[in-house]
Image 1 (cartoon, rainbow, N blue to C red):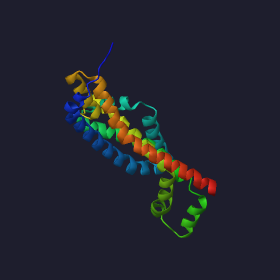
Image 2: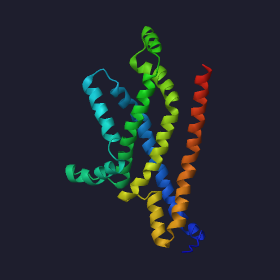
Image 3: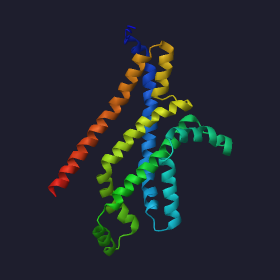
Image 4: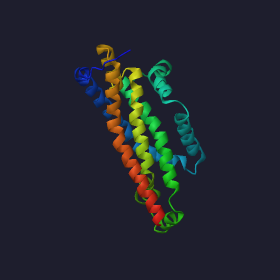
Length: 224
């Protein structure tokens, strides 16, 4: 079968694709804000000396890390209204689900960074009578964030790619609009190829930054 691509159809589909891209980017930005900010208290709770707090944080992390994101999305969008009578719009359900999922992974990244801080620095902070809050803000978090930055950026790229799942609950993201255009113009090869290119254009520069940071950190360790 000799298939002849018609790339001109992409220009007709472009308004739909750009609309979907905007939705995907807005969704990603909201999810990233949730993950970056709320991952910190969950990580601290995971390290808490109080058993019940540590146990609840660990349970939360493991539940979201050990179940498929698509299943979580379906549970929030379909099961939540049936069990609790809480009906969320598709976009809000997507932000909530992917945000909660990202928090779990971000918390573990933060925790790994927190635990890498030399004990001597914590002891020095205690001698200076810094509160636990000041220790986290001024000593622990800046170093942990810098050390875990490659992992954090990789998680953010993953969150952007995970937004493709929200099309399954009717959110008009890039994938949803690509599928719509594909059905409208009967040109799935061209439409989905360009859609893949859109995702690549967003994600690839971040992966380059991650690779550069990893090389830089490796060189720093070698020079120590």
